[in-house]
Image (tube, rainbow, N blue to C red):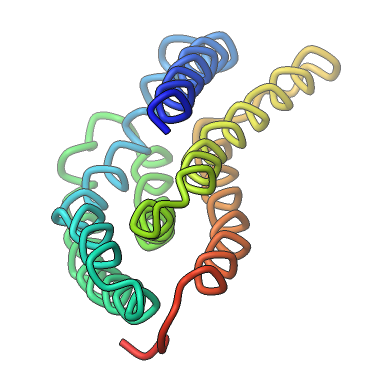
Amino acid sequence: TVAGNTLTNVTIGVMGAFTAALAARLLGPAGRGQLAAIQIWPFFLTNLALCGMSEALSYFIAKDPERSRQNLSAALLICITGSIPLMLFGYVAIPVFLSRQGTTVVEDAQFCLLMVPVLVIMVLVPNSFRGIRNYRLWNVTRTLPTAGWLVILAAAMIIHIETGFRCSPGLLAGLFIIELACLSIPISITAFKALRGTAKP
C-alpha cells in the first residue's frame, strides 16, 4: 500500500512537471500566466468549498462502511451546495482582481468557475475509495485528472506543430473542465457501486 501510494505521488509529480513545461512551451510566458490566473480561482474556491470534507469522508466511511453511500451523498450535497455562493463571490471578485489581465481573461476566468462543483466531485469521490481501503482505485482515480490534462496539452502541442494553430489559455481551461466532467461520471458510478448502504443523504 505504501509503495503504491508513493509511486502514485511520484507519477503525479512527474506528470505535473511535464504539463507545466508543455503549457509554458505552448502558450509562452504571458499565456502561461493568463492560464494560471484563469485556473487559480476554481482551485482556490474548491478548497474553501471542501473545508476538510475529503478527509472527514474517508474517516466516516472507514468507521461505518455500511453507511458509506450515504456519507458520500451527504458530503457531495453539502460541498456542492456550499460551492454556489462561493462561485457567485468569485464571479463578482474576478473582474476586480484580474482587472489588469484584460476582458478576455476575466470572462474566461468567470466561465471556469463552472469547474468548482466538478472539482468537488473529483476530490470527494476518490476519497471514498480510500475510506473502504481500496487504495488501487484511489490511486488510479486521483491520477486520471493529471494524466488527462497531459494528454490535452500534448494534443494541443501536436496540433500547433502540424497546423500552426495555438490554443488560447481560455480554450485549454475549458477543455480541462470538459475532461474533469467526463471523468467524474464513470468514477462516481464506480464509487456508488463499490460502496454500501442507501444513497439517500
